[in-house]
Length: 158
Image (cartoon, rainbow, N blue to C red; front, side):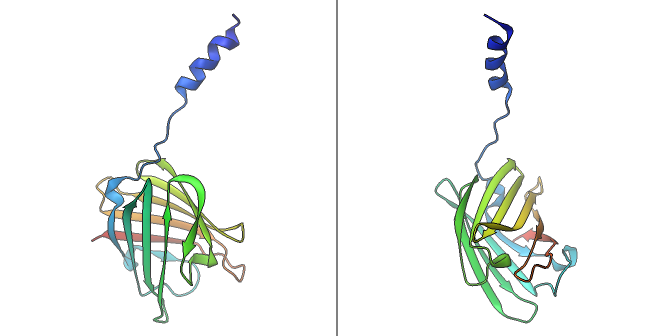
């Protein structure tokens, strides 16, 4: 038996396993903290609420926003944290996205990729505070006018 045959099984054992389970601290209602959030393009929303609920092997997310001009915007999605694309529902999704893929980085961090007609239009890194009271989303993308839409949005657990 050569040294490569012995090394292969060890390499498989040493590869870290990332859990695709949703951290239960994420479930519940989150309200946008405008004072702690930063928007680089356009007026920020007046308000936003995100609701996370368990769904099958993943989660269901419902978002309600009151835009800077007072329009009510709602959208949502059901997703597993497996990196596969799932449809988004709603008339005005972020950057016009029609699908989303979410991948678990660690128990407190996820990364989402939003696509419109197959093209990436937004990436979001979500970090849940260890105490489960603050959720920070760092978003980078391009809107329908090809302008950058970078933001850091901070949410407080309700």
